[in-house]
View 1 (tube, rainbow, N blue to C red):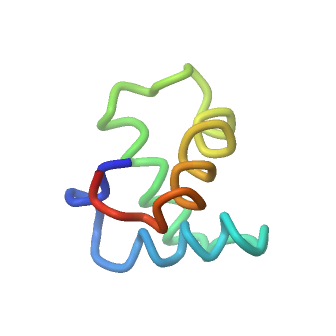
View 2: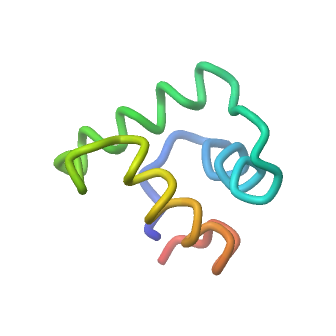
Length: 66
């Protein structure tokens, strides 16, 4: 997952969510939703994208830039 264009710190929040399942702060959630929109709304649903693509990618590579 390419996180280079994400707002500073967002990958840390998303990685923590991926590993713990604890809710992200509302600002981080909103920022991630903006990333999803900017990427063309992959999978057509934010929650599906988050849980099917983002979370596994963050667990796999710890939120690296690729």
